[in-house]
Amino acid sequence: MAGDKLHLIGYASGAAGANPHCGEGPLVIQQSSFLSALTNAGMAIQWEAMIHPAVLSTSVLRIDEIVQQLCEALAKKVSVLVSQKQFLVVIGGDHTCAIGTWSGVYDAVHQEGDIGLIWIDAHMDSHTPETSESGRLHGMPLASLMGYGYPTLTSILHYGPKLKPENICLIGVRSFERGEAELLKRLNVRVYLMEEIKERGLSIVIQEAADRIRSQTVAYGLSLDLDSIDPKEAPGVGVPEPDGIHGGDLLSSLSSLVADPKLAAMEIVEFDPERDRDQITEKLIIRFLEILVKAKK
Image 1 (cartoon, rainbow, N blue to C red):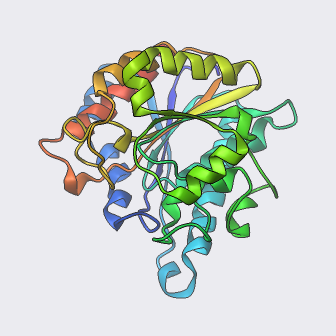
Image 2 (cartoon, helix red, strand yellow):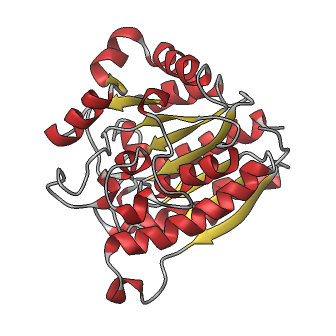
Image 3 (cartoon, one colour):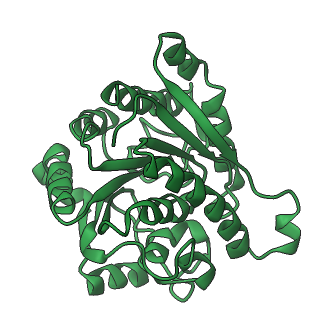
């Protein structure tokens, strides 16, 4: 995607996550002195919106209806930017924002062809209401994007699936439940567990996933859940899982993709400032944004 600015949209909600503090993550990034240092150095970064839950939603709406409202608002903003060939990053918030992000990308380009997604996450996020023990919606967005789950969430801007299973790759998975694993296996979605990453190397895995998806789609995206990274390097996340990806490896691996004209958008999610230590997760997010803005110059 073209564009000389990095466009940011905040999804300031943790309502569907493990705790609500992830909703504060985008606000912390927006006000970050480290982000200000980038803009002061002349890097073109522009906030397009900060999407919040409606004040009274929690008392009058079901959680899926709250997420539906948020994701419809997000999807509309994403669609406009992608239609204008502008690269964007969504800063979450819990991972339900993915339903809005990629529904928006789909809305912008589906008449040209399919979209794809590289999902970097410690978890599969592929539960349905029937398989989820916790019932938390942040464990369901990928299933929703494939057309499974609450009708309120599978019909954002368009009814039905936004992603075909063959156009999705999961990377970094190391914690999952039976029901979601069975769904992905039945759909033949490519999942790179941490064991395979350790054996083959992260850069090889990410390049392989990108090559596979790029060949079958007109545009694709990156969905980065910060819990994919080892908690020692990114402690400020909603659901930390030990033995994760090294942050430096991920930064260098993604730097080879960000200049790809088929890369339409990225999201960075599940930042929980309350759990962060010495702002190291915050600094890591800013390093990702710095790589992106330099690539889009």
